[in-house]
Length: 343
Image 1 (cartoon, rainbow, N blue to C red):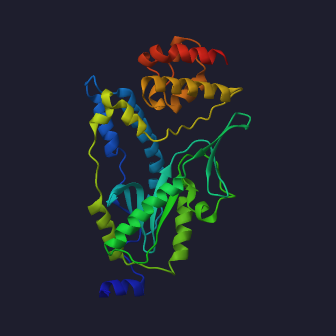
Image 2 (spheres, helix red, strand yellow):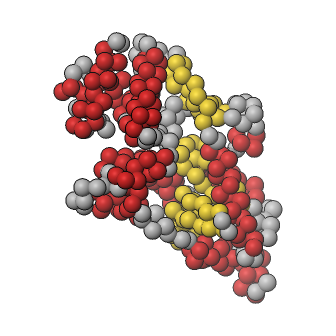
Image 3 (spheres, one colour):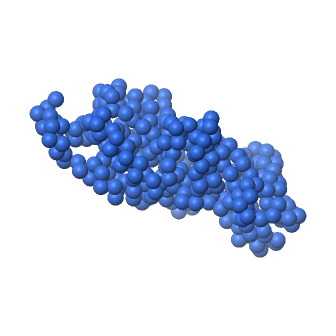
């Protein structure tokens, strides 16, 4: 151990005493800028519906990340933070929302802006519940575990750092932060290992403070070591070139299949809305099969929710639905109106 490092350990004097973003948080990440630029082009082959949908999804996700950034940046804790990092290890790659390096642990933080009420079962399964205005659950659906995804990211980072001699025993742990303030999280029955890894954004600061307090006695890394870890991550951060071809009309089906699940904030409400919801979904799926495209391309879940909320009765009202422009209204409007009128 170097003399300077030894002195830091013995005296507990550090240069890093507050949060520092070594890879800064930006209000307009590269993928958002690229899509905004694409939509300014006049190329008639650009699938603008798909590009606009992706742009809106990225913006929604970025709002959740900004909440986490605020908590970290105002934590007054000795942390090195990196936002929006992509790392590769062999044939595997992972996109990290945040990597947070402390003197005793490295956190991999994944933000999720989910809708509905989320229940975690005894077996660790995630169930989403949608309720009507009276509070009755009208729909329950399973969803992919965000903890499993973030766990894979944490293990990739841990292996990468160990292979390059940057850590030996320092733990790398994953946290999933629910960034939607309307989401109700029920994890009373969840296994302890899952329960502690999924929290709301307003709980993040207290979680980290308590965790660091407990870990300080177990492990300790000096300033130079956590700086080296941060530099290594920055050096190995790899941007993916923007692929314009994904947004050309000839590539529509493949591009749509790659879109992540749409997360909206408005649950469907009202009497018999479950039946309407399912019938509209069936209509969407039927047209998707006929056109050999993903159902998402016909109209997404956000559009579906808006249809149910506004209950259009004619073409003029239909054109006010978000995501249904003139072309889609002409193509699918009659069928949508026929279904809605029944309710």
